[in-house]
Image (cartoon, rainbow, N blue to C red; front, side):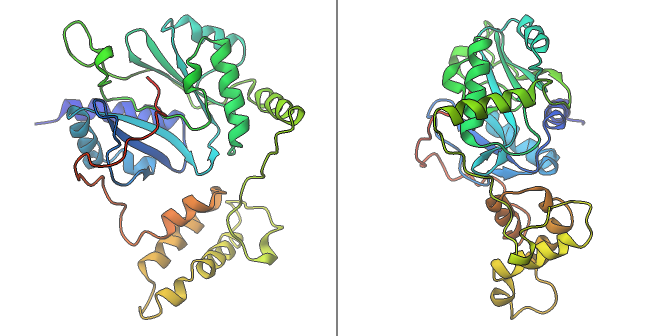
Length: 309
């Protein structure tokens, strides 16, 4: 018998991820009562997140009391998306955002009277200070939650229920996180927001650290990283092989090792688009498919409150 609930959740996830594309997503399961994070693999691709087996697992954990949170991942930088946790759940606020050129790419209803919006302000990763400044501006303008206004706050993933006790409906059921609007776009005033934040930080004397590039051999550091260049990805691939010491670590293997193959595929395809060292190392070092979340009880340390309502 078809699982209608699974189908609805899959459709919601695909709508959300389709409007906020990113190479990797940070996913966290947080138990609503203990506020402890569920242990296991945290970095996922959109393809992995839309696999039926993964969604089934997440739905089970959600029924057991875990809230499902997500964040576009760019390592120690912001992926170009700003989360706005709207305290007033009036949909008219979205029209105000459109009028001012701050159109969200995603608008979620996390519970009746509560909204979350993701605003894309850059197609390249942003400095944490810049992203946090923009997040505070938007939260101030649209009466958002200032406590959620920072560069790496987690938002909810659509298609699951909001397990917070305070958000329970009159019938006692947990409300669903619903997609109200999804459109693949950047905000009209995205460039102006980034430039204004840079100017403010420069005026206050904040030092901005340049975005880290993938590790290249010295002769390649002056070259642009273009996904359409057929030769440069292979050069980047060779540089990563040497930096990760894969030939030395797998010299006993014959043929192409699983890590070698994984790294080669990443460099020929997606990896050249990610100027982020930790994400590349994460993907390159996996010998098999990423582990699923491994249940091991709730004996992990409580996490900082980096989740929006």
